[in-house]
Amino acid sequence: MITALSLTTTFQLSTGNKMKTQHTPGPWIGAGPSFGDPLPRYTTEIVTEWENEDGDVIDICELPVARYDDENEANARLIAAAPDLLEALRTLVNMAKSFPSELHKDHPDVIEALAAIAKATGE
Image 1: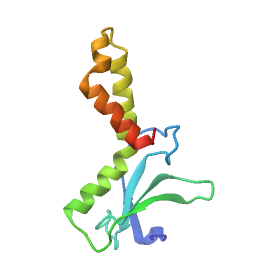
Image 2: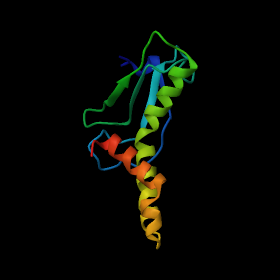
Image 3: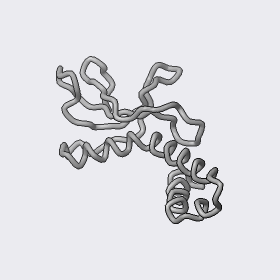
Image 4: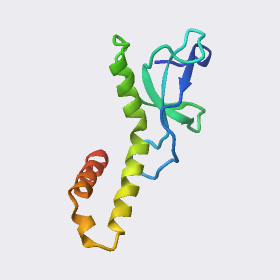
């Protein structure tokens, strides 16, 4: 766990507004040891960009510290982007459902998007 801010730097992986939902609101960011560099040398955890009432960020997940490779960094970016992706998908589904034609509501892509939202939210 990284706790000393003087030893670490965070970098933005995700932007967006806080959402009202059961998961920890975004945005989430990647964090890791920087060893004095302006950016982390590798990502070891995903945390909230914002602080709680105690002034601490909230840990979302930790990443394998034995693996510092491009795949691990890509996984970190995908995890950190999850709240924004969920909100964007919800927006697109609502937009598609508002189209005048009933055809859009039953479109396979809309159905797939609804399934992804259900998977992410446990609905």
